Image (cartoon, rainbow, N blue to C red; front, side, top):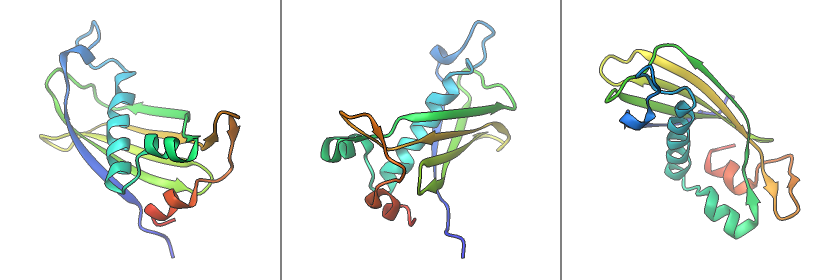
Amino acid sequence: MKEQLKSFEVKIRVPFYDLDPMQIVWHANYLNYFEIARAALFEHHGIDLYSFYEKHQLIFPIIKTSTKHVHPLFHRDEIICKATLVEAQVKLIVDFVIRKAADGNICARGRTEQVAVKVPEREMLFSIPEEIRQAFGY
């Protein structure tokens, strides 16, 4: 039986400072929107990765990102960024969809991958801690 994927959505209004000289959102700023949604997803499920670091000396660096830009975003666009956790065994894999709030049109899709790393040793673990897996039903 496949587990139910955990998702969370945030609404964001595109600020002026996210624009590039062509007056569209600069490509790297999509990662900021992903981060806002990912943090909200984790918080919604009771996981604060910074507190997890303080308690367990584990960090969760991003090791891979990808973004497919479908339609540009402009100043003051209201968007909904949905984050969905699709893997939490060996690494944290989160998929993203950015839609315009007004009409639901998809503007971008993305994915991030994170691993657990013990500090200060900088030793990569090959599993996500049980506490995090349980919070997401893995």
